[in-house]
Amino acid sequence: MSENPVVVLPYDDYAQSANTLFHFMSKSEYLKSILINRAIVPRYCMENIEYLDIHIGDISFKEVAILQKCFCDIPFHKLTDNFELNGVGEVYKSLNDDEKLILTKNNTHPDYYGKFAIAFSKSWGENKSLQPVHYLNENSLYTIEFTKIFDSVLSADSIPEEYVRDILNRLSFAKPLRGIMKRTIKRNNSENVSVEFYKNFHDEKEWRYVPNPTVLSAAKIERIIANPNILNLRAGIIDINDNLATEKYRPLWLEYNYDDIRYIIVPDLHSRIDIINTIMAIPDEQFDNQLQVLIQKYILISKILVLEEIRKDW
Image 1 (cartoon, rainbow, N blue to C red):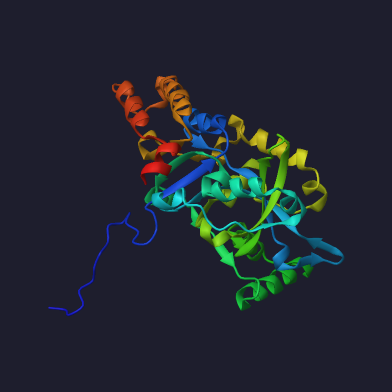
Image 2 (image 1 turned 45 degrees about the vertical axis):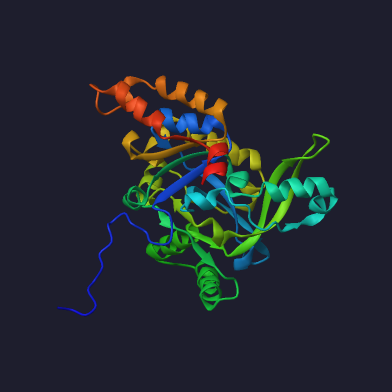
C-alpha cells in the first residue's frame, strides 16, 4: 500500500476559498432582470491599464472598456467583514471625522459592489468558461514582458490574427494587484460625492465572464474598446450597454437554469418581499419542468438570504 495515498476531493470542492461564485449588484432592477431573463447580461466596464504603460506614439492608453461580468469567490463569513480603509484624494480629505467613521464601519465587499447578489456553484462557473482574474504586479517580470509584447503587436505592420487574439484574451482577464477605486457616498449634508480609495484588488478574488470570440464576431461586438475618443464619451458606453440588454444580443448573455442558483441575496426584509413577488410573477414557460412550476418558484424563494441577517449571524 502507498505511504502517501492520493486524496481526491469532490469536483466542486475548494479547500481554501468558497465553493460558490457571487455576483453583486447595486440595484434591485438588475437582480429582477437576471431572474426574469434567466440570464446575466455582460456590459462594458472601465478597467485601468495605466500600470502597463501601453502607448502608440504620443497616445497613452490609460484605460479600456472590457465586455464582461464579474463574480467573486469570497467565503460567506468574509462577505460582511470590514477591511482596512485607505482613502485618498481631496474629496476624502474633505470628509469630517463622523463621515470617515461611517465609511470605516461600512467598508465591506457589498458596500462597494452592491447589496443585491445572485450566486452559483463554481462547477457551474467552470462549465460556463468563467476565468479567475490574473492580478498583475506592475514590478514583476511577467508584467514588464507582457507590456513589451503588447507594444510589439501595436507597432508591427503585420501580426497573425491568433497572436492578436491571445494578447486581447490576456488583457480581458488581467487586473492590477492594487489601484484606485471610486465609491459614491452621501455626505451628512445629503450631497453625493465620489470618494477615492487605494485598494488591494486581489482581495476581491474575482472570476470573470467574457463572451467567446466566435459569438462576439457573429454579433459584430468587440471584447475590448480601447479608442480614447470613444472612451471619453461615457454616455456612448452607457448606450452600448443598454443595447446589449436587448434580445438581439442574447447569444452574448450568460444563461443559467433556475436550479443552478445557490443563493439570492437582498439587503433587507422589504427587498425580500419585492424579490418574492418578482419570482412569483416569472412566466411559467421560463421553467423547465412545467408540471411543478409552483414548487420550483417556492424553491427559488427559499434561496433568498437577507444581508442584514447575514451580518449578524455569519
